[in-house]
Figure 1 (spheres, rainbow, N blue to C red):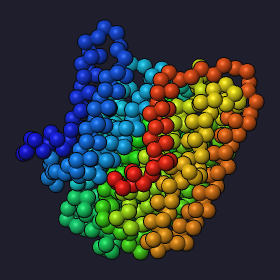
Figure 2 (figure 1 turned 135 degrees about the vertical axis):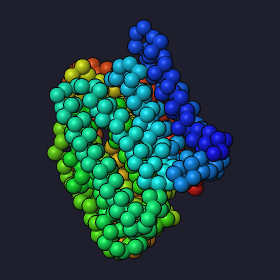
Figure 3 (figure 1 turned 30 degrees about the vertical axis):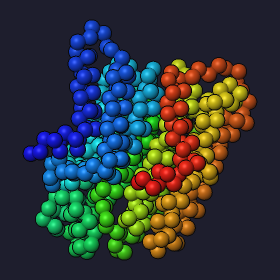
Figure 4 (figure 1 turned 90 degrees about the vertical axis):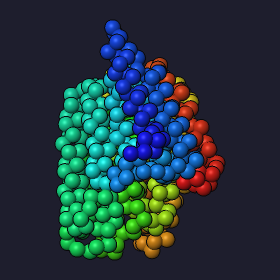
Length: 459
């Protein structure tokens, strides 16, 4: 074993693990629960910079041949998730107490990073489980109401179902191709045999469930509403990014065969329409974002219909823009002792007259999520639909564009509350460190708005 290749190739993961172990040691040696935020932030920053450096230098290697390999694309994906985790950790101050939530966050990110380097279904499964299991606990950690335990249980059961489907699909692909390498998925796409096709469909269904694509979406609204604000932001931005970037690695350079275009196109299309329509009826902000994420999962999985060479670029840009906007939106939310009341859209009434900066950042997030120019969300959707049209699926792309227009109403409804509603006269306290979290998001948002080509040239 080449220990130098292992150390350098898995440097972001090693830093996350070291930070997690330090948090455990600090808690054991302290008489009272310490504040885990400073150490968690230092760990996340170090891991982010390491991933960014390895991506910029074009490092590639095989720390564990046949199980885990690294390349610039994998490091870029890890940098995206670790960078998004920094403002999420800032939002956690005051919402989640003690070092243990940060410990769970670091372990979940460790799993997310593993999935982006997985070369076999075994490593992919371990990474997805490490990504998901801490989140089940984090959903219940805040315990803001009786719905938290129910949401965590529903998420756990359906997450376990996704794991079972992934394992069954991998076993069928093993029978069809004779290997557990993730390359067997691409081979199964082109095999055309019943066994390989069944394996491919089960693996795709598992990723649809993890990404909350209709009809595998039932866990998302309850989990998003039952969790605290930072945990919801983590699920919406980073868990979604991890699942989609892992799916990109799974598909590799393989295209979607004509026989599988219908199921892979139809469910994301239904997801776009249903997510946008259901979001219109929501009075809870977090539940609205859940249905919005269901619609955005449809847009993201649409990318797999396009040409393989443009797939990573489209998905990576989308998850960066989508993740930044979700974290920015949650950073702008008013705090309140009554979590259920603070979560209602009516709590945003007259936000601009009381906290102009929060209202403006919320407006930027909503307009970008709606896909309106000149914000990054517009470029992200353009890349997705351009790739689909270039692959020859013009009719499917037009249907997706029409479904995307359904989302304009509820995003603009949020702006109506924030900018046009009359103030209630209450003082809305700002969340601790929310200003820093929003600034960490606004800087890259501004760069992506004015210089999107700079990032696209490097993806």
